[in-house]
Image 1 (cartoon, helix red, strand yellow):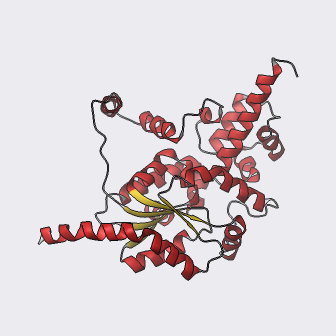
Image 2: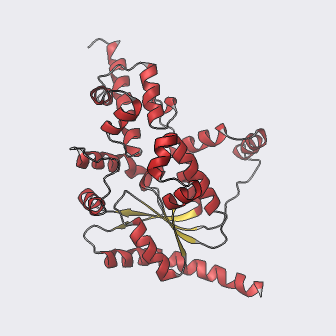
Length: 301
C-alpha cells in the first residue's frame, strides 16, 4: 500500500464504520436499508466493510434512507454527543435564541432547567419497558405513558405507517413533538420510550435532562426471545442474521444507553423480580418527589 493510499483506505474504513453504527442506532438491518435506499444489500455490505468507494450521490441516498444529515456520515474528529445536540438545536433556532445561546456560552447568561418530569425507561425492544413501566406506575401511583403510543394517537397512524409515509426523519420529528407536549404536564409520569430514541440527539437529550432515566438491560438472547414471544420481529423479519443484527444494534447503542441515570439488569429475572428491582432502584427518586410535592399541596390549600 502506498503512503498516499493508506489515508484513503483508513477514511473508507471509518466511513463504513460510521454508516454501520448509524444504521444500527436506528435498528435497521442491511436488508431494510437496501430496500429503503434502493441500493443493493451487497453494495451496502461493501460500503460498511470499508471496501466500497461510494459516490456522494449514493451516500446521500443512504443518509436519506436513515433520516440523517449526509454530513453525519463523514468521519471527522470526535466531538461527543453534546455537540450533535447543540448543532441540531442551532439549525432550527431563531436569531434571538442564537444570541441567547452565545450569551450563555460566553459566560454572560445562565441555562434554565425544566421541572422534573418523572422516570423514563430506555433500552432495546424486549427490555420490558412497557410491562415494567406499567407495573411501576401502578405501584407508585403515577401515570404510565408509552411514547410511541402517544405519537400514534396524536397523528392517527401507526409507527410503521408514519415511517412508510414520512420516513425515519418524519417519525423522529413527531416523536420529539409528542415528548414536548408530554413535558407540559404538571404531574410526573413513568415513560416508556422507543428503543431507537437514542438516535435523535435533541430528543434523547431532552429525555435525559427532564427525567430520571433508567436503562433496562438484558442479554441479547433474552431481548430476542421476548420480542419473538410478542410476535414482533421489526425490523428483522425474515432476516437470517437477526441475532447478529440485534448484537450490532446493542453494541452501537450501549454508549448512549449508558448515559442513563441508572441501570437495571433484568437478565435471568422473572417479571415480578425485575419489577421489584426497578422499584428498588427508583425508590429514592420517588420518595424525594413525594416530599417535594407534599409542601406544594399544603401551600395550595
